[in-house]
Length: 480
Length: 129
Image 1 (tube, rainbow over the protein chains, first blue to last red):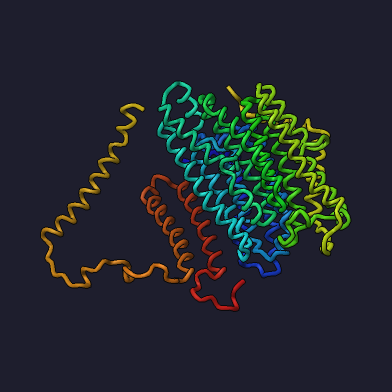
Image 2: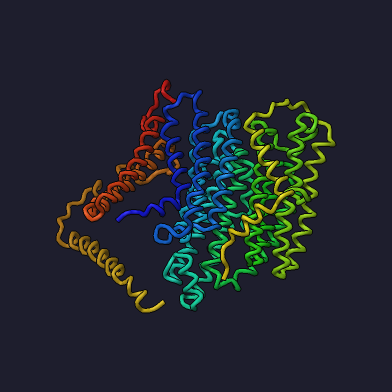
């Protein structure tokens, strides 16, 4: 009895991350206080090596560990995306952790462990493995959110996230249990086969599906389950907020797509309208909430709720075109959100200045930062020549292609509405006089690196979208 | 699903009833044939040596929480080790290597908590890293 080498190759990125995460935990206690930043470089090397080692599963696609893990184009795409997010988050946290005096080793180790969970969610082909992946991400992020443990806000955020998150976990687990009860299996293809043949207990399966939707919808911050998002995003350390809004979101969406488009495909008649209604609610409430915020982190939190709504349009399209649109959108979205939150983490200097008014006259203090933030905000609106434009374009195209005219119209109206609050920040940055005297803090090299990549990526996707779009189109899940 | 599917759970039901039966039988037997010499101390409810009644909102050291977490960790380890030890012969070298990896990970955690001073009930001021 032994594990075939190809099985290990198919989870090589996760193995690399696990080795480096463990290495950090082992090395950190032996470092002196001034040497702790070494752990950041270990984490960076680990994330980059994991990114590189994604080529191994890419060369040997197929099932591993008796079908628990399925490596296909879809999971490879998500591995590249998730590891890119982790790498950028690590670099963006370098100076933040030093400035705030937060423990560094644990931060990077938890980030790497969370990435393992995200990777498993992207390639998990069995409900319990997906659940384990989700829990790995969740537990790591509960701790990361409360990382500024002397701050009341951070504690409040972690507490809310933990309590509501465990509640959602219970829903998800109960859903898995009911699906198992209905079909006698937890493997996604087997569930699909059982349901397609009319076997299994239909009502029980539908209930399980509903509970699964609640659990995943909570983690994705869809609208009836979005209440935690603003508080958690506001209280968490800003690099963690950046990570939360990009990484776990993409990973949960990967699991969401795979479960609903393979295992629950035979029940699609029952879930498409739920997605349809949730999309409308999520877009409208996300954007209306964002309009009323004066705190930039809360505004971006509501904006990320709204963006989950746009993504659901492509989900509801229920087509390969829709999946490709989701994949492309996630790349564009991750780049602009990581970039925007990195700037917020620099400007807010110790989380003290989070108000939109603190950005008054930013163009005079930091012309380049203001320009970068403008690029990200324009991309979040979906202005041409940015990645956000093509992302929305493909999503709306997928919606029209699937005859979801109503949904697309609501989406377009919401995009226009969202311009109001994004442009408000641009207006404040360029047209208002700076209030008070905020010090001009030089931008650290690590942040310059992150911003260069994210700005180039955002504009690059807006000018030459086709390479990533082709990659996304080759990576869709096969639909029957 | 079908008859077969549900009937595969019958052994668990039997086991459940058996466990209740045995526990009930022991209690019943000790009640029937055991000698009884009650004293007030014996009759008072037992709760780990603490007074079982009183205000629950007493302050107690938050360190108990760490100890409890560490206990659960190593408790789970013991649970895995026993199962593993029973079938070690069948698992062979593969099982040995897998368990070594598992124990190595636990050891990493142990080293970490030791160096961080979690095991010192009253940490010496000079050593906090």
